[in-house]
Image (cartoon, rainbow, N blue to C red; front, top):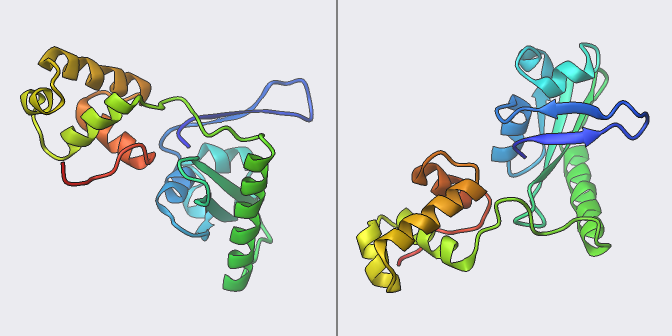
Length: 183
């Protein structure tokens, strides 16, 4: 999750909150492979999510990254002053959240595609780039021109909101659109 806009269903106010790309709670979710507890007080001045919840609600945070339906990127985040969970509670909460997302996907409420989906050729060019090949080598390997290689890299970078080809490779790896393999 890099940028989220949730409508406030309870009122006509529109946006409930916008979470910025570097929000520390989302960063913890992004790198976590299992649920975790976060001390909200230590990041309260740096997180839009924690700030929106208010000082009382943000004392403890539980973050559950949804890993059961790749490449979908999601997390369930709970905040509360009295939030107290054991390891067993975290395991159960993780199971419940992942099952809920599987069910939402099965019912058609979640769509697998998302902004940044790459074409097969863009993925292949990024994979070869990630494996250290130059544009000339990629062009020869795929029997296309260097100009076409650069066009695929530029298109992939735009779709992934990347400022250069290195960042495009990193984002494609992060979202599971490419893998590092022997070319």
